[in-house]
Image 1 (tube, rainbow, N blue to C red):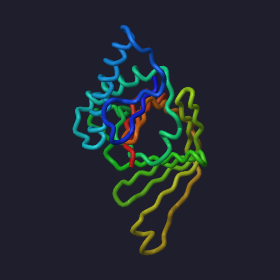
Image 2 (tube, helix red, strand yellow; image 1 turned 60 degrees about the vertical axis):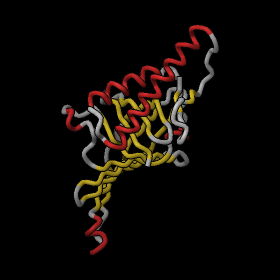
Image 3 (cartoon, one colour; image 1 turned 45 degrees about the horizontal axis):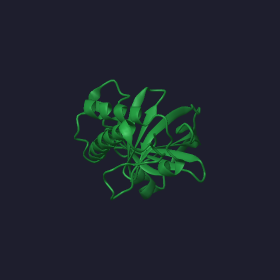
Image 4 (cartoon, rainbow, N blue to C red; image 1 turned 90 degrees about the horizontal axis):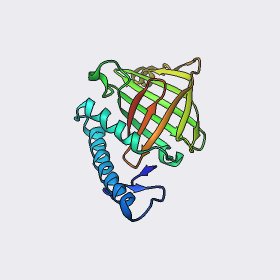
Length: 199
């Protein structure tokens, strides 16, 4: 079941596909909706404050991913700019909340993507393309260009940016939830949950 929610509505979550009405199936659906509302609200708070326990965030995301199959997240819900907040790919739990500013941009019109990282005085940008399978909610993407700049030097001395070509390695995100606040994706290569906050 694909899950979507619009800003300002809060609970309940609007489910994209039709569901049976009446009987035990409907009762189970109501319970599932209620449970998912709580999970989504907690994930929204975690994305904003980064205060929830990392293990709790992973557990909630895995729970939501389990509820979101089968279903689809449309590309319209993914297109735009996102702050990459959380990923359990690192070996240390202390690094699950991404310690640097990482911004991902998905442009549905051009099928391009850019991942920008700000680390100290440096600005790193990975640029590439993606394909999106709405039936599977899978984004296959790769970055073929790597750009390095130092904004202070660029402004004062017109130095940079420096652009490099790189081997494009294909990666896959499976999106299983998206609304106007957050998106949740599963990284197949890393076997990790990724939480994004819309900006």
